[in-house]
Every structure is written in structure tokens, then in C-alpha cells.
Length: 233
View 1: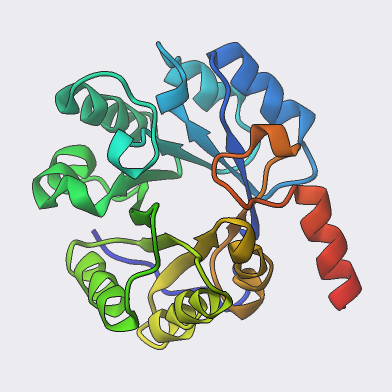
View 2 (view 1 turned 90 degrees about the vertical axis):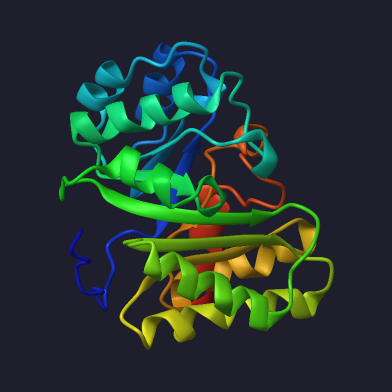
């Protein structure tokens, strides 16, 4: 897969996590948030029988299809073969992005992505307990690039304010290599990273319509983010 060059003024800033239990409610959630987000993350691991074709036809903004593993905070109940099959279906339909965990392995990347060049690959890494040392985080970045990621995504739990600085420092590190990146911290102490990541050049940050529909701890709502950015000028 040929990686597009990084756009200095990336159009994607707010990604709406869609964490609904049915396809119909997912479609409704995107409609209700219209005008507040730039792309949506369809968390199909929340849906028992996701209707990907319905979601594809209903979308009005670019969409990420994510079928998150339990090990990284997801809710997918089936086996690994079935999980990959759903992601492959998203690729075949032509969704703009699929998100695949780095821990799934290179074979999963090859199986899900095939030889197509339309759907872009987000390779993600989540640490739900801590923020690893910077050296380890940079090694993860390099490994994701070797696997052919169009966008690399690293999300960790902030246990200190300094953890935000560590993770945010990955953004200029990746951009120097012409690599698109999403880098954020979870938790109450990670909120500042969600505000500043796009301002530093990250492709987007995640923000639900209301806090009850957040997909990770520490997410600010889309309206809260927009108001903070407005005040920052």
C-alpha cells in the first residue's frame, strides 16, 4: 500500500466515537451529531450483528471501522477469524479507514487489507494501565510504519501530567518522517492531550456527542472541545 503524503492542514480534527448496540442506533447517532464532527469511528464491536452495508450507505462523513479486541478495551465477543472477517468486509465495501491493533500481527494486516489501495489502515496500540517509556513508544511507532500503516495511533493511560508530554512528543517525531499519527492519553489526567494533539498536527482527536457515549475515559465532548479551541484562538 502506498502511503499518501501528510497534509499540513489535515481536514480531520474531531472523530466521533459511535458506541451504539444496534446498526439503526449507530446511524441515528451520526445524524444527531451532524455538524459537530469531521469523521466517525464506528465501534462495531459494540454491535452484535453489525450491518456494515447499511452503515456505509448512511454515512455522510468519512468513517473508521473498528472491531476492538477485549485486550485493548473492546467488546468483541467472537473469535479472531470472525473479527477479521468483519474488518475485511469493511475494506471490501470501501470504508475510508479500518483500525487494526498492532498486536493482531502482520498476518492480520495482510488478511484484512489484501492488495487494495482505497481503504486506509490505522494501526493502533492501547495501554490501559500506564504510559510506557518514550523509547518504547518510539519503537512502537517504527514498528507500525514497517507494517504499512497509513495512520499510526498510540493511546496510553496518563498516570501523571508528564505522561501527556511524552505521548504528545510522538506527534512531531512522526511528522518529521511524513507519517500521520493520532497520539492521546486516557483518563482525567490525559484530557489535556485530547485538546492539544490536533493543534500539534495529530490527524484527529476523539470526542463524543455526550459524555455517556464516550468510548474511553477522559474524552471531552465535541462541544467542549470546540469551545476550548475557540477560547484558545
